[in-house]
Amino acid sequence: MIKFAQAARIALGSIGSSKLRSALTTLGIVIGVAAVVINASLGASFNQFFADEVSSVGSNFIIAYSKQPNLFYDNELEIIENTPGITGISPRKMMSGELNYLSETKNVDIVGVEEEFREIQDLQMEEGSFLTDKDSYAAVLGYDMANEEFGRKISHRSTVEIAFRQEDGTLMKKDFKVKGILQDSKETIVGGDGSTDLLVFIPVSSMNELAGEQDYGAFFAMANSPENVRQISDEVDERLARNFGIPDRDLEKEDVKPYEIFNQADILEQTEELGNALSSFLLVLALISLFVGSIGIMNIMLVTVTERTREIGIMKSIGYSRSNILSLFLLESVMVSFLGGIVGTAIGGLGAYALENFLKLPPVFPLTLIEIGVLVSVLVGILAGFYPARKAANMNPVDALRYE
Image (cartoon, rainbow, N blue to C red; front, side, top):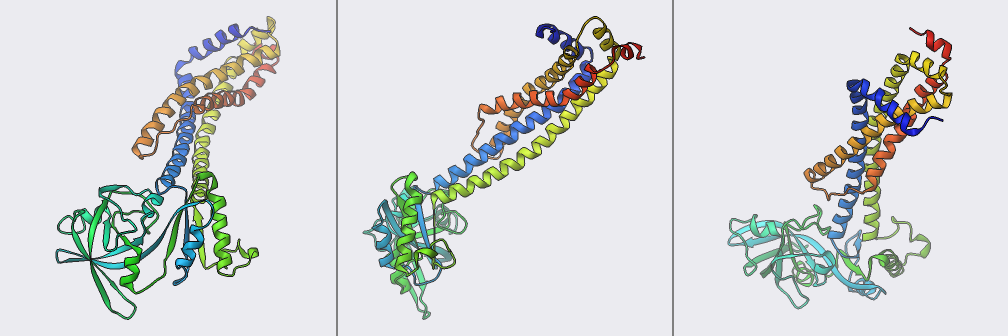
């Protein structure tokens, strides 16, 4: 049996004898492995990004939306509030209204909430403070609403006029003291566009008073721990279903219920599935590049076998066995691929870091990607080199020596 050190020297000598061809062959593997590493890292970064985004919009939240008007009242609020595991709850009601400041009027989206809404949605203040349950005619403005929408900036001590139009057409106006301004670009799920920047928050009791209504559009609740979110959400669902006369057998039928419930765990699961699908798509694209690189190795190894036919005949005539020849050419293929894998992994790591910074994604580069890059390159070398190596090993020594 030929020693590994001797086989490695022969393989390196063969690679070194055709430096340009070996470099071009290696380039295909470099590109393929780099693509695999970059796309795998990007997939992990997207997963982390989605998870961070969901976590940033609240703590262990459970949200119940009404699908029809006049569905949620104080009774439903108490049902959710008294559910075991619920540590905080706030009604939420969104309406269009008019905001007047220094004789300038804008149509805006106004959100009626209670004190605990800030903690549930993890809202951060730029100026002042958030609403409390003791406030009546106080308002908190989104960053852009306070700083960009009006000719003059609205400070957290300003007074604004808010007006709602009731069902009979009556326009109800009231002065509100601006109590606080939210930080810029806070992502949340209170509004349709996922941002609080253009929203105005007021006590939900004041909103209902001016609008001449008593119902709520949704409830935002907080569970006692991330591990219990789904279980507590299911309990809330069951209690609300019983309240509306929905039998247990119909709990899974969303179209039967006049409301909809989702929670942080559900959203995390959906974003994880989205991230995994994106990762799989990117990985398939990278594997195509790697497949093209493996074809290049196989092609060059077949050429090498043809060029060294007489050498193979001489080696067999002086005692090299079939397995020795197979090992030599297979090792040469693996070494070319391995070198490409090392370089490709390094380039892939740098490329992934640069792309993640450009796309403003959290930089995620699992150390296992280094192992994956090297192992994939070795596997490609074995698969691509096996047929040429087997062809060389099966050559008849007499025919090989006669080859011109």
